[in-house]
Structure formats: structure tokens, C-alpha cells
Amino acid sequence: RERATGVRYQQIVSGASTTAYWLSNFCYDGMFYLVPVLGVLGTLNFFEMHQLTDGEFGNAVICVLMLFGPAVMGFSYLLSFFCSDHARAANFTLALLGLGGVIFATIMFTLWLINYDPTYAYPNACETPTTGFPHGKCRSDDIRTTERIVT
Image (cartoon, rainbow, N blue to C red; front, top):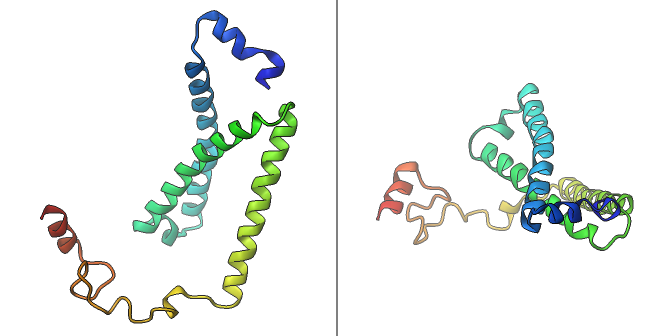
């Protein structure tokens, strides 16, 4: 849209750098992305889905949500350079992300349908001692992890 209105050129003529212009756009888009992130986390807490919000898995969900926003914003910025019209760029981005979501959902449904479990391939992997885990556990206790970090 800035190509149609010339906002970026106005900012540059006013003395703003190109980096400052794009960084401010990125921050502005990031503030709008916080609303869905907080909505997702609020909904998970409202429906008491503690397995998705607590512990290591909760940290992973928050990490994915926080990394998805900048990734999609950067992806949209890059795609906008290939389209002459801002509406076409937005529709193309939404269609591409929607198609990716459908493909991912289909793969997950298929794996669920065939009852896929990655631990079937290596059933004793967590019980076999290795150099990193001499006690044969896939995850060591906090004390052992702390000892490993300190030494």
C-alpha cells in the first residue's frame, strides 16, 4: 500500500531513514499480532487446557506463538514486493498460509488416523543408557542437568 500512497518516500524526504521506516512498520504490525497471541493464551486458560499452557509444553507454545508473528510479518513483506497491488498481495499471502494450514491439518489428521506414535520405532530408546544420559532416561532430573551445565 505504501507504493500507492508514497508514504515511505514522504518519510525519507522528511529525514527518516529507510531502516527506521521498516522497523516502525514491523513494530506496528507486531503490536497488532499481540492481540491474537493474548487471545489464544486466554482461550487456552479459559477452557482449562493446562497441558498446553503449563510446564515445558506451555513454554514451547508461547515460543511458537511469539516466533510465528515475526516470521509471518517478514514473509508478508517479502511477498508484497512481488505484487503490484496491496490487496492482491494480502490475498495471495492469506491463500498461501491457508493452503499450508490445510496441508498441515491433513497430514496431522492422517497421522492420527493411522495412530502414528514415533516411540514405536524405537521402543527402548529411553531405557538404553548413552553417554549423555548414563542412567538410561531420555530426560535427566534437574539436579543432573544442573551438574552437567556446571561441569
